[in-house]
Amino acid sequence: MYPEDDLLPLSALQHLLFCPRRAALIYLEQLWADNLATIEGAQLHAKADSGGASEIVGEVRVARGLRLRSLRLGLSGIADVVEFQRPGGSRSPPSGLAVGVELPGAHGLWTSFPIEYKRGRLRREQGYEVQLCAQALCLEEMLGVHVPAGALFYGKTRRRSEVLFTPGLRQQTEDAARRLHELVAAGRTPAAEASKKCESCSLKDLCLPRTCGRGRSARRYLARELESA
Ligand code: SF4
Image 1 (cartoon, protein in one colour):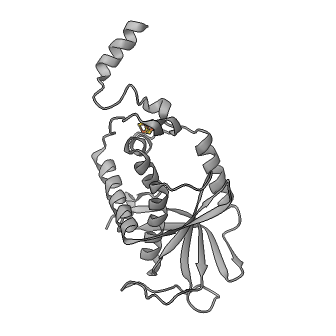
Image 2: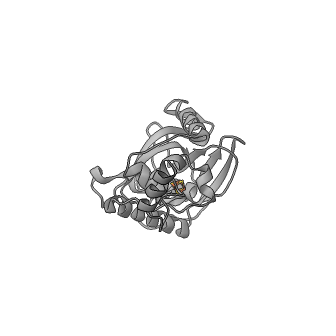
Image 3: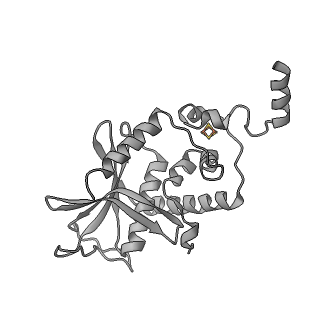
């Protein structure tokens, strides 16, 4: 269990899985730069949170901007949306977890279904699914309920894609949380590994992946720059 002071942001998992150096630049070196994708993403999250804290849509109760945390994983953050739905199906939850939670002013039990907003079109990204699964693990720890599935909502197409929280995805999420804490505890920014994804990384101009890559000597780089000045 992590103390509350050591909790790291849920959203850092996505950066870590995209590139560990990106996570270190943001969370160790406090660097940040926007590009079109990050600006559009921030606008989408702001829109998701702007619809009021909660509402009832038919048989579904919608909570927005719900604060989450897991002391076991050492993570905290905010869920864009959590839908509380009537339990369906007959599968029993894993031991120690309830099938649903009681809500104030409502009868019966309600299951939790987290939804994370993402810009662009539907695409499979491990970081997105891990971040969403981390929200589910937070809800399970906080509410004591089983959270079997959630969804990614894509702003461009306004479509959701359901994500099942399988044992494999849960394991990947726990591994990513552990690696994130190890990265922060080590306090060292990994060397850059230039790849195609650097083109879409908003930190490219701060990271300098072609000059700060693994095996690249900063001394030789400086000497080259001074020679050409
Ligand atoms: S530019 Fe490339 S190496 Fe640098 S942080 Fe971004 S993805 Fe990682």
